[in-house]
Length: 81
Image 1: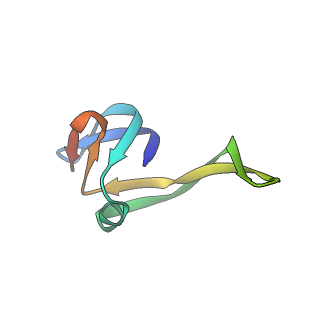
Image 2 (image 1 turned 60 degrees about the vertical axis):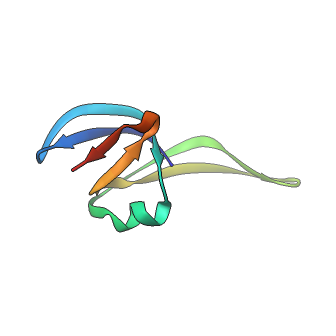
């Protein structure tokens, strides 16, 4: 999984921004560790194309902000809230 940006939370406080996150692990475990989410949803249009044979469809990405119990980031860095 990939996240464009986020904010680290340490001891319940927002601490520092993080960018270009590569999340490692199993998607089902990440989904089970969700502690909260926002109602705010931002879609980023024009991120790419979905191609299948002669069919080409523009795609966008987006989701609300999530608070996870823990996650493992690229380079083996682990964050736990």
